Image 1 (spheres, rainbow, N blue to C red):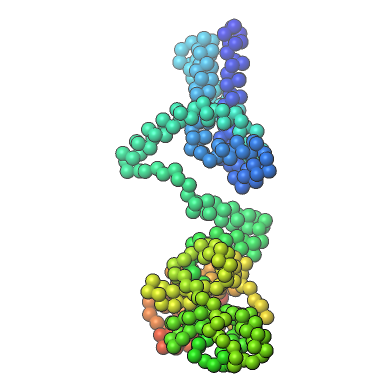
Image 2 (image 1 turned 135 degrees about the vertical axis):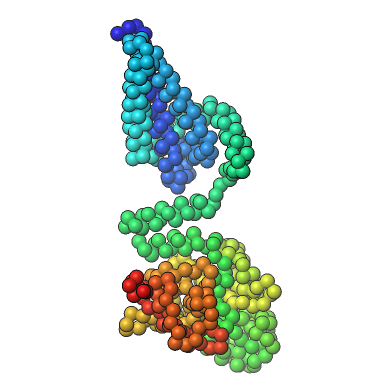
Length: 428
């Protein structure tokens, strides 16, 4: 063995070791749990803070690591070729160097470190965060220049790369993680629905969950105080819209607790109650408000009740804080609620369902997956699929279920029979 080989071989081994570190850093930093790193940083873990800093500009981090890794691998290969061509002259020396370095780089600089990093990404990322941060600072300007060149080149072909944070992608990443852990049996079905409900809030409008105006219990301001109290006692809700002359003309909202205070103030003399003095100002919101914004608005205003209007100001329905919370935790029933609203199971396995029942509520009650992207209610889904307003007795099969129209009132489907999920042979 020549003196040159004695010197160069340890250098090659050192370079392969550095390449292994770069490979492990790249794999661990791209696979580390962002949620866990943020939690560790909040607890004072400085290594986790470095990881978060690197992940925040992932393109620069990966570019710097790849640049350093390629430089090291090319240098190691060049040194190996220099050594072997002295022992094996000509093209065979180059072939031998290529074969040996390919195996060495593949096994010791790629597969082995990346396998370790995949098995323990969080721990490896924290250990290698300091040297990786140093590499990013060293090669950052070069990587930035490369990125600029790449983007300008892609722009020539009409491809614009925007590195802004994609919030929807983050939501889908969380949803995918929940679905994966649910399939593995680590997340229960109820928890999966709750987590999915939270993610869906920003994608849903109040019009999708509101109580339609036809189903709102209202009070007529022109009734006598005694009649108003009697109507309020019949209602299952504690907050009731009050209208004057026309049900579209909402002048206030009557709260049952305010009514009790007023009744106590007049010592039980119902006719002496001044209803106009105790009703609260109504809160109107547009039907395009998404549930996340409305939930924040409820919390900010410390109010639980809002009336929904369309772009023309016409009353469409009402939404409450409870309605939004039910999208997360499921149906919340109290002693005044019916056990099942609009869904009645039959002995043959089918269900009778009111046309006004929302598809989302039906899916939750029956664990079905009927689409609710375009229509809110079951009746709306049937009309959309049938492309007509069906007559009583008509039957349709779509989305693996049989829908039979039971009752129709004017142009509104009021009752249907829906079968359980059908097999392919039954649909045929």
